[in-house]
Image 1 (tube, helix red, strand yellow):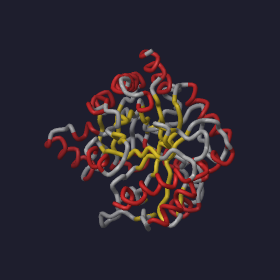
Image 2: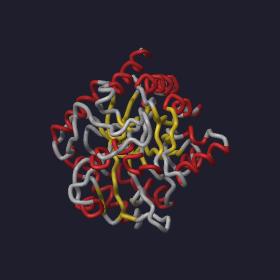
Image 3: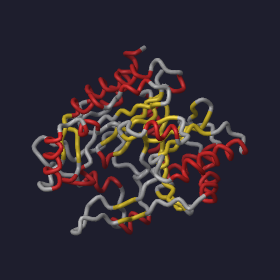
Image 4: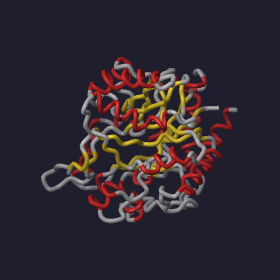
Length: 359
């Protein structure tokens, strides 16, 4: 069986910071619920199905998500993890409670979203307001980071590749201290704590940084190529698309059935490359007319994409037959596997059918 691991957003609960930045009680559902149609046939708002507008502070919600994912062949969740330096974390409560409670009994790993937070909208001067700065204070902070997450690393549910802890880094080359200090330090600390070590995976945006990431000491890359269709356009078309978004304030629109043609590259069959499949995409709940979206994200097209990804990885060593799903619940990006009111469990069923077709 192919190893499907789904990125998981822990945003769906109130936090003091979001209260301050966006208003009391804000969660990702705020953007999702108020999304508007921007053209005829635009599928918005996207309303969740059987799981509803949930709150991730509730353990029964987290269990229902895990049960659903397991039923349709997803091995585990890759939780987005926010560590900004000097011990500052955000959105940590759901994952911390999963670790502390032992529930749900469902595999997990971590993806360090090491990027600053800024408002998506630009002000009148064309700049974005910085909300939280990503910093890299040095070795002691890397030690603190490791020690803080050690209970998760020692958990029997933690997903492994080649016997090592799978740890994903969103910006693997953002600061040289990450790969020159953190990676070797964490390998050392893992051994000192009775662990086999880490299997570090860095994001390779559209496959362009593969060589640099591997040479920096990472074990593998995950190729985030969901938006490759934009880069396959002619220069004239790209200029037009920029005019549409920046001047006309209308979103870039691509047909999903066309976008999937470019999501799985030829290098997806390499042992140290994890392809990424995306069931849908619509960033307009967050960015309005400045967003980008895929139109007509019918699960039947997603099934074709998954089959192509499975074909690409099936010849690898089993541990490396990893396909990342982007994402389990990124509702604000219109990027989710969870049931919605239009397709129900359609994306989950497409995933399972594609897997069964390979058996």
